[in-house]
Image 1 (cartoon, rainbow, N blue to C red):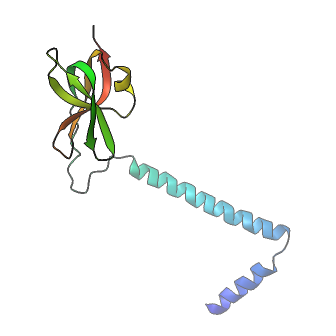
Image 2 (image 1 turned 90 degrees about the vertical axis):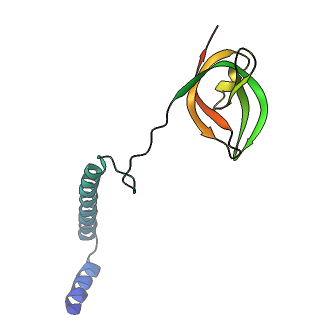
Length: 138
């Protein structure tokens, strides 16, 4: 076995010029084809939905909507983020704190609107609505 490897090594080392280029191009095509085949089969395998480790599907987040006036509420501490807005009803009672990743709350501050989103809790146990849609009223 060792003698065969030595002879193969000697033959490859002796290659020069066009023969070396042909060998390298052949090796390139071999790896390119192998990668293409692997990608084809791996891609087919990953098309199906994968289950979580526990075997249970991830729970769906429920969309909730509230109607009221969006007002600046100061900053309610939250890990990594700041919650600055809340929703008031017609009697100026707090409904829920609001949070959005973009500036939609800043733009609609002081307006009556229906806000839609999902609820999460802060470390203090405060309910906060992560807003993804605002529909202006009146």
